[in-house]
Length: 193
Length: 91
Image 1 (spheres, chains in turn blue, orange):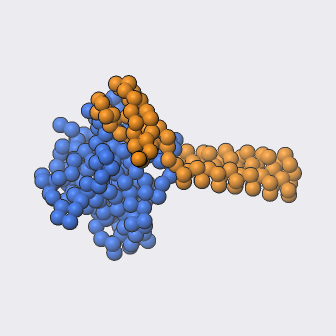
Image 2 (image 1 turned 90 degrees about the horizontal axis):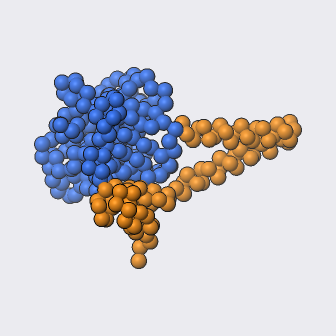
């Protein structure tokens, strides 16, 4: 079973990593279902997802389009099929107060939004970094289809941990949901360092 | 008429004209459907940062050169450039 097919999984950032970043992805039973590696010394973010820590079987590839951008965009490729699934774009201005991401399809049309839980808590987090973040991902539109995905950071001042819950009726491609979780762990987790 | 970026799919070798909006990104090949990287990065911000970095290194070199000596000025400029390069790779 591919990791993004599970309804619940947990990301944990590897603590002792000198250059770049790595994450383990666990199922509810605590078994490792994936291993993410963020390449170091790359001007553009390059994150690869593998079946396990041996890094033999690549499952997903996330790459930034630009080196520096206020509204950074990351393309997501399903390495098992060799096809681009979609992209994730950070909403630069909106993210100043409340982290906001747009989920795009392969033609860059917005299909979902991912946002921090509340503007008040988001503002408080800018000053008190210890408050764990919670994101909700939902299909775009005035009357969104399907349930919302929750991405909750656990309270831990030393190790970044993220719990992801995907409802059965989630209308967004689960691979993009997974990529969102990985990017949040990589980008938001790095901001806390 | 939208601008396009000519490229070639590395999998099926088919030439393709990709919308310039996707420069620097990844798209699916119109023929085989597999992912290909589009050349021609749009990195205006990064270009501006590099120019500012070089200008800063030159300014440091000139300042040090004026107060200490030309040789030290060149060394300071070189060290500044090297430091900025390492910083850009590790951030």
